[in-house]
Amino acid sequence: MSKGLEDVVASTSAITFIDGVRGRLLYRGYDINELAELSNYEEVAYLLLHEHLPKPAELSAFAADLSSKRTLPVGVKSMLASLDTNSDAMDVLEMAIAALGIYDYPVLPLNEKAASICSKIATVVAYLHAHSRGQTPIAPRTDLSHASNFLYMMNGKVPDETAERLMNIVFVLHADHEFNASTFTARVVASTLSDAYSSVTAAVAALKGPLHGGANERVVEMVAEIHSPENVEGYIRARLAKKEKIMGFGHRVYKTDDPRAKIMRKCAEQIATTDSELRELAVLEKVQEFMFKEKGLYPNVDFYSGFVLHHLGMPTELFTPVFAVARSPGWLAHIIEQYSDNRIMRPIAQYTGPTDERYVPLTLRAGKITE
Ligand code: ACO
Image 1 (cartoon, rainbow, N blue to C red):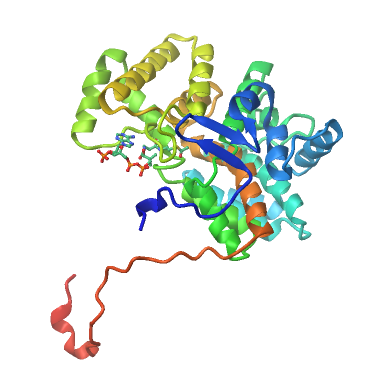
Image 2 (image 1 turned 45 degrees about the vertical axis):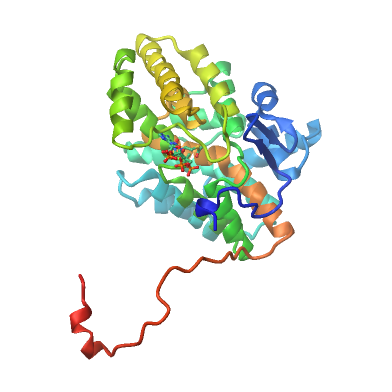
């Protein structure tokens, strides 16, 4: 028995390779450092979904297909419009992806479904952002890249090249990560031969948890509480003394630096200009240094990503939905891979309960009630 399935090899996969000892991450053989520097959302989504980097004609056809699929079905828009403006964003996202499965017709081939989900999930997040502020959602444009259009829908203006580049880096870094909890969830659901929308809905539900996608929100809250670098040691010491986890640290697979965190840190260093950004960055760097000294732990991708997302105009409560936008090509690639060589996921439990209980009729059980 391996608690939390640690080190359990649950299936084969040709999508993503993580070397947790050397801190390497490869998508279909390509190093994450190269992809983050040289590639973008469309290319990486294509790479994950279609198993090779696209040729120019393949890339333009894929990008055109994604942009043509951005508009939400009317039924989904009216469901979103009917919700309370203060609804939890991840709950709304789960509902919206499930609803896309109802309204996204005619029934599409799997590759088309994948493109549709990857494209529309960004529109859903922008839509729920506007809705939560009581504003009219900004309709997607078809002439912008995925990153640029997303920032346009979120912030109301077409981003400059630097912001578009930064958004692409965030998307590329989060696009896949082997059998993480949400991707594994998606594969379990797909393994029952349930559909892609249901599998992604389940993945979104798994991503919602603070041990997975929700960590960067907590990092931002922590930095605000710490406020300045001289408070770091006292704050972290007090938290560790209470056996609390420090968000944005530790990883099941990486035993060294998470390469994504290193890239995110570099981005943060490049974009920090205002006094408050420089102070927040100094707090983050001090926390990193102190956590290594005290616990030997390295930051994961969530540690610096909140800082970068704030800089791009994303509100804290939408960090996890933005993560879902970025991770959808990975989820879909894994769902497609699961279908291609499927066997239902059905592990067994090491039973620890009783084995010799005797049935007692209800009328004789009064004395057994404990709550
Ligand atoms: N803060 C303090 N101590 C930690 C942390 C942390 N963030 N992470 C791990 N540790 C310690 C644990 O207390 C434990 O120590 P012990 O053996 O003395 O009890 C040891 O390191 C192993 O930790 P586990 O929780 O058993 O590691 P696991 O592999 O189960 O969990 C996880 C990995 C969930 C990422 C964990 O490190 C954690 O909770 N981190 C904080 C949440 C976080 O940042 N999540 C984002 C992950 S990345 C992503 O999803 C994109």
